[in-house]
Every structure is written in structure tokens, then in C-alpha cells.
Image 1 (cartoon, rainbow, N blue to C red):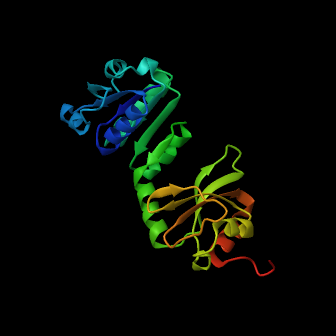
Image 2 (spheres, rainbow, N blue to C red):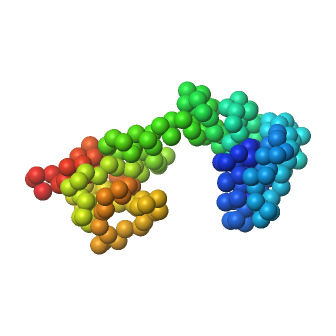
Image 3 (cartoon, rainbow, N blue to C red):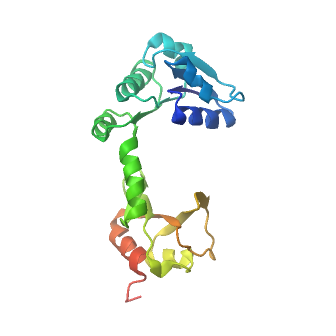
Length: 221
């Protein structure tokens, strides 16, 4: 696929490298030509200097043949303008914009442009690590009935098998995050202190799942 990225900061350059390593065709756009220094000599994609919502700049970056567009510059206005041009003028189906202001992010989501609200996401991650907050949704299926969530695990489950946790709660343990790495659990995988547990369950099961994850099996069990 051909992918156009607006912004060659830390996020944009890392995204460009990952896509390039996967064999995709990548063009990176930035107003500041010195920003491209963040790209390693191994990067095989294209760099284009210019304003990200300027049509001539976008066409130089191959927007007409792009399968996806990511707007990750440092400016909310530039990101959303560029995302709208990519979607509405050039018909790029997969468009994502990074937005710092969470209130704006909600507005643009209603316009059909997926956003990553950086401030909200970062604050949420800090909260998840400081306070037990039950289940934090990471994905919902289109119907809204099936949820993938990171669910806080109480001390009862430390040293116990993840399969027992799944059986007691009725949720399916999708994976664990351990020391920053994803782990696919098997029947004998034991939950360790510091593990983040990601579980699939039906939305109507949420209260039960949160209760069992926090305190252990229900007494009647």
C-alpha cells in the first residue's frame, strides 16, 4: 500500500519507519526540511517539503494513489484540514488525525474522521497505572456488544492461572501485557504482579467481569 504521513516528528518518523520496514510505500510531508533528519539512512520512502493541506504538496506525495493518510503534525488545525482534504478531495478511505484538544477530537469523530486525542490517551494511561479503574475499553465491535478491555486485576489473582480468571468471570482472556511485551496466555499461564490483562466480553457482563477481576470468584461459585 501507499501511505502518506503528515509530520516528521517523533511519531511521524517512527510510523514511517515501521511502515517502510513492512514493505509499504511511504511518503512523509513536513514544512521543515530539517525534520527529515529524524529518518534513518535506511528509510526507502519519499520526503516532501510543504504544507500538509496544500493540494500540490499532497499530490507530490502521491495522495491520488494513497490507501491511507496519517496527520501527525504538531498542529491540530493543520492535521484536521489535511485529513479532510485527503478524505473529501482525494477520497482516501483510511484517514487518521492526531488531535491534542479532546473536545475537538469529539467533533471531528462526528464528521467521520478517526482521531487520536493525545492528551486524553496519555492522561488515561497514567490513571490506569495509578488507580484501579475497572475495565477500560480498547475496542468495540460495530454493534457495540462485544468489548475488548484492559481490566484491572486485584491481588487475589496474582499467582493464579489466567484460565481460572477467565472461567470465573465469563470473559475470554485475549492477551497479557508483561514488561511492555504482549503475551498470548495458554491454560497454564500464571498472572504476575504488574501484568495488564486484556479481556473480551459482552458489554452486559461488564459489572460481573470487573467484580470478579477485582475480588475473586463470586461466593455462590
